[in-house]
Length: 297
Image (cartoon, rainbow, N blue to C red; front, side, top):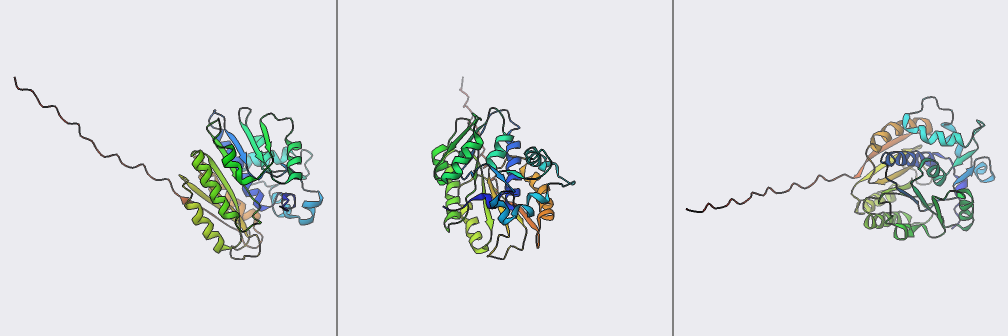
C-alpha cells in the first residue's frame, strides 16, 4: 500500500467528507448517551499543508483555502471551520485536521474513538498525534476488518467512517461488503462511505452494490468540481450514509449548493438523494376479538 493522504489533505474531497463528518457527530451528540466513532482508514490525523507532500500537489488551495476566509458561511459549516481555525490560531492556514483529529475535537468526554490505520509509518504518526487522549484507541491493521473486529460496541451507538484510498479495483465492492457487515453486526450503526467520482460505469455498479447491502436507509450526497463524465480525473466525490440521523439531509441541502459554488474548478454541481429510502412500517392486520357467547340461564 503506497497511498499517503498527506498529498491530498484539505482538497475538495476532504472538505465534503469532513463537513459531513462534523455534522454527523453534532447530530449524534444531541442525545446525552455516548457513542463510539470508528475510522477504518484513519491516516495520520493531522496534516501540514506547508509540508513537502501537500506542497507538491497544492490540492488544498482548491479546497480548504477557498473556505478559509468565507464570509457567507452556512450555519452547518461552523463546527468544521472552527476546528480548522483553532489549529491555525495565528490566522495563517497551515495545519489541517484529518478525520481522527476532527472527531477527537468534536466528540464529548463520554464518547470513544476507535481508529485504524494499515500503513506502518502513518499508524505510528497517528498514535503520536492521538497520544494523551484516553478516549482514543489506535489499531494497526487491515481497515476492511474493522466492522468484524470492532462492532458491536458497548455504547450501542456507533458512527463508522469507511474512507479507503480507492487504489485497487475491488475497493468499491469491498466498501459495499463492509457496509453489509457493519449493518449485520449492529443494525443501527451510522456508516459513512466516502468515494471518488471518476468512472461513471463503475460508479453505477457501486450504487447497485450499496443498494443490496441491507442497510435500512442510505443517503447519497455528491459534490462535483468538474463535469462528472471524465474518467481520468477526480471530478468530485460522494458520501453514502447509512442510517443518517434526522436533520442531516436538510443540513446537506444547505451545504452542497454553497460548496459547489465555492469549490467549482471547471463546473460545479451537487446531488442529494436516497439510494435506499425508509420503508413505511407494514400495516398490522386488524384483529377482531372474538366475542364471548352468552350463557343461557
